[in-house]
Structure formats: structure tokens, C-alpha cells
Length: 144
Ligand SMILES: CC(C)(COP(=O)(O)OP(=O)(O)OC[C@H]1O[C@@H](n2cnc3c(N)ncnc32)[C@H](O)[C@@H]1OP(=O)(O)O)[C@@H](O)C(=O)NCCC(=O)NCCS
Image (cartoon, rainbow, N blue to C red; front, side, top):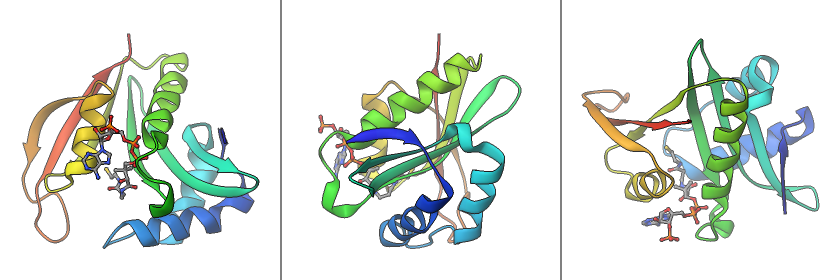
């Protein structure tokens, strides 16, 4: 298994993992946009050319922002997401970012546990953040 920067050829596999992972998946063209604009912080973990999971982030002036993360259902609970989060945090730190933030559905226990385990702290609840009216938890982690 290796973690590496995404390539254009990976994008269809990334979109597929997104589709099987979320009730309201991002459309495939969002991944093309993220690939074109933010590929340094768009990582996949793969084995023999098969993408097992991905993480995408963007960076603004001081802060990184994790946009999406998903692991193929057959490859969950093996520590893969935790590795991807560590890797993107390392890249954001190397780019001089002081913090990284993300939003997660308040009902997403797996993701909330994951982010707490890798050092994120809950900042606040953002009401009505999602299209179905669900609240988000805003979480942040310091990078230095
Ligand atoms: C959330 C998700 C990314 C976790 O990926 P993963 O590779 O299975 O996670 P890891 O194996 O690295 O787990 C790390 C920690 O996360 C937590 N965790 C992961 N899956 C969990 C689950 N189903 N229930 C509760 N806690 C869970 C645990 O604390 C785990 O540590 P442990 O194994 O020591 O208990 C994966 O379930 C997924 O793709 N879900 C659908 C998409 C999604 O919700 N993405 C996040 C959007 S913000």
C-alpha cells in the first residue's frame, strides 16, 4: 500500500469511492476541480493500481481545510484513514500552515472518533450546515 498524490487516471476510482461512501456524494467534477487547483493536498492510498481511499484538502493563507475523506467499504477499520489524515497534515505543515480544520456531520460517529483519535478538537456546532438541515461539528488541529 502506498500513499501518493492523485493523478488524473485515479479520479474515476475516487468518484466511485465517494459514491459508495456518502448519501449525498460530491459530483465527479468537484474532484476534477480539486485535482486541477489543489493536487498537492489531494492524496490517494493505493495497492497495485487500485485506489482504496482518498483525502482532499485545500489551503488558504494560514489554515488547511480537509474537504473530503473516504475509504472503500472493503478496506475500512485497518487504520488507512488515520494514515491519510497524518499525511495531509504533514504536507500542510510543510506548506507553513498553523492549523487544519474540517466539518463533519454530527451523526458521523466513525469520522468523529477518527478525527479525535488523530488530534482534532471540537470547536463548535454549525447549525444547518448540510443540505438536509443536519448540523456539522467544526474541528481543528494545530500543526505545530
Ligand atoms: C470514517 C472513515 C473515513 C474511517 O476510515 P477507516 O480507514 O475505517 O478508519 P481507521 O481504520 O483509520 O480508524 C481510525 C479510528 O477511527 C475510529 N473509527 C473508524 N471507524 C469507526 C466506526 N465504524 N465506528 C466507530 N469508530 C470508528 C476509531 O477511533 C478508529 O480507531 P481504532 O481502530 O483504534 O478504534 C470511513 O468509515 C469512511 O470512509 N466512511 C464513509 C465516508 C465518511 O464518513 N468520511 C468522513 C467524512 S468527514
